[in-house]
Each structure stands twice: as C-alpha cells, then as structure tokens.
Image (tube, rainbow, N blue to C red):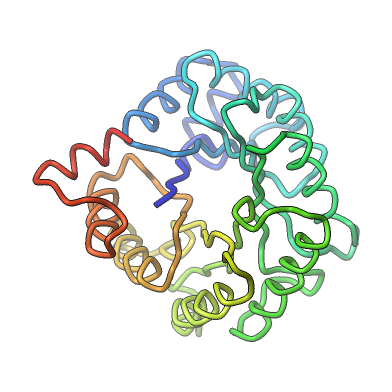
Length: 272
C-alpha cells in the first residue's frame, strides 16, 4: 500500500502558523515523524495558508528536503504552484503530482500540463488524476468510470505508463445529506477502473474526506480504507501518524497476500 502522509497541509492550524512565521521546525518535525511512521510520500499542500502560493510551495519543499529524503507529493490544482514546487524538488527520489482533473471550464488543457510536468521529472515522475471534469465532481458510478477512461486514454496517447498514473475516484464526506451511497459508488467505480488498462493504473483517494465533520473520524477512515483496499485501492493520502489506521493498512496488505507475514509485521510496516 502506497501511503501518502497528509499532514503538511495549510488547512491544519499548526502548518498554517508555521507558514506564516516561516517556522521550519514545525514542518521538519512533521516530515520526520511521518517518514518514521512509514509514509511512502509526503503530501505538500499550501492550501489557503499563504497569498503567494508559488513561493510558499517552494519554501515547503526546500524545508522538507533539508531534513529527510522521502519522496514528495506536490498537491495543488494550480499548475503554476506545482511548477514552483517541482523546480525546488529533488526529483531523483521520485515525485508525485497531485492532482489534475480531466479538464476545467477555465482550462481545457489542464491535464496535459500536469502530464508534461510529470514527464519533465523523469521516470520517477508520477501523477494523480481526479475523476472530475468541468462539470464538477460526479456523484454516480458511470460518470466516474467514463472520466477515468478518458484520462487513461489521454495518458496512453502521450506514452505515459499506467504504472505512473494514479486515479482518484473522489470520496465525499459520509455526513453530507444523501452521501451514504457514495462509498459504495466509489468502490464500484474502482472495480471498473481497474479493468480499463492492463496493467491497471494505481487507485488512490484523500481518505480523510470521507469522515469530514463526523464524530468517529478515525474509525470511519479505517473501515473504509480496508473496504476500498479489498476492491483494489493501492494508495491513499492518509494520516500516517494514526497508528491504528496504519495497523489496519498493514493487516489488510497481509490478508490480501501483498506482504509476507511475520509476527513483527506491524513494527516492520511502521518503519516503511
């Protein structure tokens, strides 16, 4: 399971303060602890924490790389912000760009831009693409799958290997009225998306979105992650500092025969 540590994100109050104060210690501590917890990538998202998102993205990348060598996941729906982070990044360790919709009303070619940036990072450059287009986030299974098919077709036309592509079918908060059908829709979409190419693309999601605003956030996250993994999700943007969540991830990998069992598998998994 490819775990992408979610905590270096301007939506979190400690990160927002650190950005405002240019406090490297907070960012570097989060980077080190998430790396120690077994993160495959560290998500880097400025969010709304700074007016100059390009400069802040570059500062975050440089700050993280001063303390650890974990590959980064540059996270923004603004290509110029991704480009700024990419310029500052050591891409020799691999890099993941997150995240592009198929298209936008304001930018029909946005996916092409993300693909070009991922290609420019070399063979370790990978891309998360959302099952989202200029009409917004789909609510049903068929539209998610149709958008995923267009994304895969476009990436194949450009010679972008499917192993470098992550599809995010977009999970929505279960607490939102009429949203309880969405986890089932996402898992059904995953089943079909994995049949669109051989080998299939990776499947990922922003796991914490499903529990946004709910009382039992960690429990909801853990259960949905195990369910989605059983349908073929092999990546997620998660709180890797949640030990119970990571234990579920490790155990699901064991039970799906993706990792070798040993009595100390939890300790080994947490260590990456």
